[in-house]
Image 1: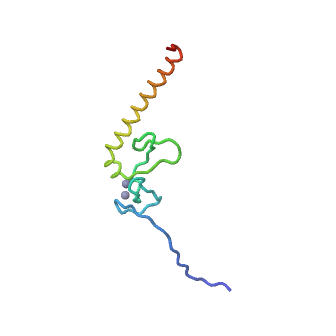
Image 2: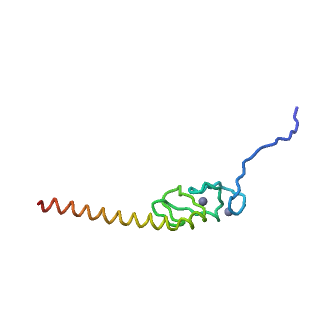
Image 3: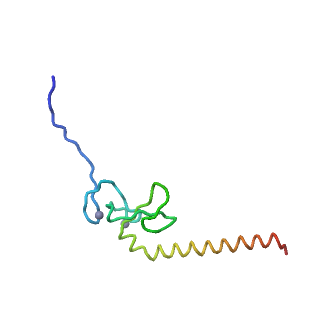
Length: 103
Ligand SMILES: [Zn+2]
Ligand SMILES: [Zn+2]
């Protein structure tokens, strides 16, 4: 016997917490944890810290609000990294100098 029955299915649907648009792909801001759509978020890489620039297949996601509000933090982090790189170079050259010209 064949019958047609109605099947009710529950489906989880995500909506953008910023603009309210339904999301085809679920994205979550790594800073505030809200669900965000493509237009309200950016892909980035913590190593690069530039919008829509990333290496590898799994970029990090941040909403545009956190990105904008975080400008001073982003600038500071990049500044610290640069300083750190410079110090590292100094130490390496000091190390080399020391080996080549022992006191
Ligand atoms: Zn949105
Ligand atoms: Zn956010």
